[in-house]
Length: 205
Image (tube, rainbow, N blue to C red):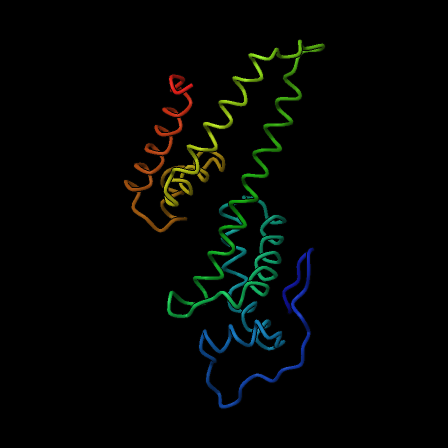
């Protein structure tokens, strides 16, 4: 099966799988995949689709969304295949990192939708419009939050997104990130403290 997604489809360019009875290397498979060789798309999909689906089930908790993740992952992998560097890791790891990034984006989008819906439902009828001071405070807090998130390390940001936005436990974060539980707890706690400090510090204005 050739991986396909809502935004595009792996190209059905003619191509013959290398003969000789040996499996192609990651570099050969990546080059063929980027060139639109059908055998490469099918080989990569067959090898990694179950693992991407499993990752989607763990992170997203929904089979339908996990299936979407599989499709979106291979569409993005095909489009970004030229950026794969075999010297920096295996092709399997690269594809799974693509999947994890898409899953985190999906979690963030889901949480944003839920919060927007909850805020809409919680609004009393005929709320008073915020005054200039209230708007200034809101903008300031949003700016501080964005700046604080940007100052976090990649590991801290990923741990916070999975734990806070994704509702994952420290043990689940550790498993998904491939780190010890103690490290996951430290990253989550450090990230939260940095955000709290940024939002509580009003003396900079």
